[in-house]
Amino acid sequence: MMEDEESTIRAELVLLRLEHRDLDFAISARAESGRGDHLTIQRLKKKKLSIKDRIIQLEDRLVPDIIA
Image 1 (cartoon, rainbow, N blue to C red):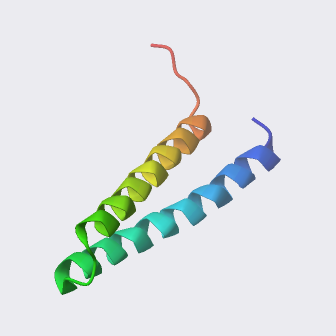
Image 2: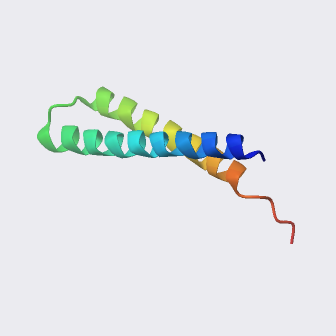
Image 3: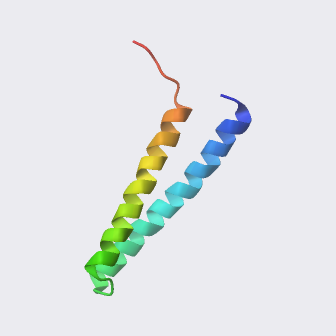
């Protein structure tokens, strides 16, 4: 993997982790305050899960495959 590609992946990971954390806070706040309807909270959870899947994909690209 080239250094440019690795730095791009790491930068994207930082942004995705921030967005994931922000969604976690938003979901918690809406659930606790009762401001968010069930459908909105479910959509936020789905988006959070999608971001988590993307984070895992990018992390896998950074870690080299080791054949035991």
